[in-house]
Structure formats: structure tokens, C-alpha cells
Image (cartoon, rainbow, N blue to C red):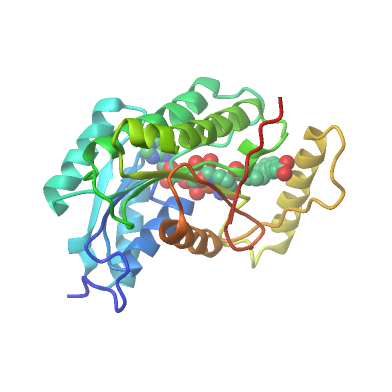
Length: 274
Ligand SMILES: NC(=O)C1=CN([C@@H]2O[C@H](COP(=O)(O)OP(=O)(O)OC[C@H]3O[C@@H](n4cnc5c(N)ncnc54)[C@H](O)[C@@H]3O)[C@@H](O)[C@H]2O)C=CC1
Ligand SMILES: CCCCC/C=C\C=C\C(=O)C/C=C\C/C=C\CCCC(=O)O
């Protein structure tokens, strides 16, 4: 049975990934499996989750013993904590939590869902991570919160931007040295801010160009003095995978990383400006 990858950097690790049925969440699960971890995929959609599981079972041949799908709405606090318990029941522990599930909303559409899913569920997932991850120094243990470059910029998406900015501020603060010392917490809490990341667009150049154009407009509309050199390129989730791996290996608690424009992950630096 193929339960270990050849080099297995994550062999012995157990990951729990939210919104894992497709997109960035699915890519993270793929990466964790590739390097030997056991993984729980949480998704609100049973159909999406089952499709993901089938695809991964084919790719990793008989790796079903390393995979668990849990239908879970992460905005439901009881369901979310149950998913942690089910994961520990199956795999014995959890040491990597990826709070990825989120929705992109324009203007103020679905504003309450944006707060509940993009922010409150990430806070809850972090609290559960700190509760259930064994509190010892282990470079493979971490809570990773998926934010967005929009959370760092002056875009014009009131709900999406503010919830992502909130995730960034929460992660910086809960992961900072003061809090990790005060609360004797050895688990790293970090965030990664992806730029636009979509699979399957390389063969659909018109759609890709039109999305890039729309995004470029968003960027310039949000800036008082737009930076003429700011260009956003749509990347595929392989670039996010590389960033995830880099952050897992090199990241420090409280770090906020950027993964955009097909570039290697880079650390964000914050300066006090008032
Ligand atoms: N795709 C992109 O360009 C970027 C995405 N992000 C962030 O990355 C994360 C993932 O984005 P995508 O891969 O694009 O998302 P997606 O929309 O492709 O997939 C999201 C998954 O989450 C699931 N989901 C939705 N609500 C849920 C809930 N209440 N509980 C559990 N699962 C739920 C969906 O069923 C779906 O399978 C989000 O937080 C998004 O804001 C950030 C920057 C760029
Ligand atoms: C305009 C519609 C974009 C649809 C994209 C769907 C989901 C995207 C989620 C993101 O988090 C997208 C990330 C970045 C692109 C959007 C704006 C970039 C603004 C960045 C800047 O001001 O520098």
C-alpha cells in the first residue's frame, strides 16, 4: 500500500484542511499526501468532497487509509469541532490545520456569510488547532490561515477585503512572540496571502485575459495613486503548493506570507505608520 511517499517530508503528520474539495484547499491536500501525511478533507459539499477523494485515490493508488472526507460546514461550531475529534479518532492526532474555506464577495453581498466563513471560522479553526495540536516544538506542526493579497491592499471589496485583513491581523497577533510566550504555545500560527489562483485557465486564454483585466481594474480603482508598475498575473495552484511547502519549512509564528504572480513565497513586513 502506498501510504508513504518516497521522501515523505510530512510522513507521520496529520493535516486537517477546510474547504478542501477543490481549488487551493484541494491543492494543499494533494501536497500533504504527496509528502506522506494523512489528511482530513473538510468540505460543506459532499459531492465536491467525494469527487476530490476519488481523484486522490486514483492519483495516490490505494491511499484511502491516509484520507478522510468529513462533510462539514465550518461556520457550524459543533460540526467543526466534531471534525477535529473524528480526525483524531481515525489518525491518532492532528498537527497541521489549514483554515482555507472562504468566499469572495463583491460589494456587500453575503456580508454576514463573509464574516462567518472568512473570519469567524478561521478564528475558531485556529482556536481548535491550538487546542488539539500537541503543544510541543515540531517544525511540521502549524496552523496556516489562507488570507489574500486583497487583505493587504486598497481594493474595493468591502466585505472580502475587511475579512481577509482581519485574518491577517488576527494571525499576526495570536502568533506573535508575546502571545506564544504568555500562553506557552509552541504551535506556529501563520497566514499565506495568495494572489489570484485558478486552475484550468491556461487553455482558456480569453477567460484568463478577461479575469486579469477585471482584477487589474479592481487594483487601480482602489488606489488613490495607482502604482503603474503593479501587475497581477493569474497563477495556478502549483504555485500555491510551492509557497505552502516553503512556509511550512521556513515560517515563524505570526508570519504573513505572500504567494502571488507565480513568484516564490515572500514574507510581508509591517511598519508602524501612525
Ligand atoms: N482562488 C483565488 O484566486 C484566491 C483565493 N483565496 C482564498 O483561498 C481560499 C480558497 O479559495 P478557492 O480555492 O478559490 O475557493 P473555491 O471556491 O474554489 O473552493 C472553496 C471550497 O470551500 C468549500 N466551502 C464553502 N463554504 C464552506 C463551509 N462553510 N464549510 C466548509 N467548506 C466550505 C466549497 O464547497 C469549496 O469546495 C479562500 O479562503 C479564498 O478567499 C485567496 C486569494 C486568491
Ligand atoms: C474581479 C473578480 C476577481 C474574481 C476572483 C475570485 C476570487 C479571488 C480571490 C482573491 O482573493 C483574489 C486575489 C486577488 C485579486 C483581486 C484583486 C487584487 C487587488 C490587489 C492589489 O490591490 O494589489
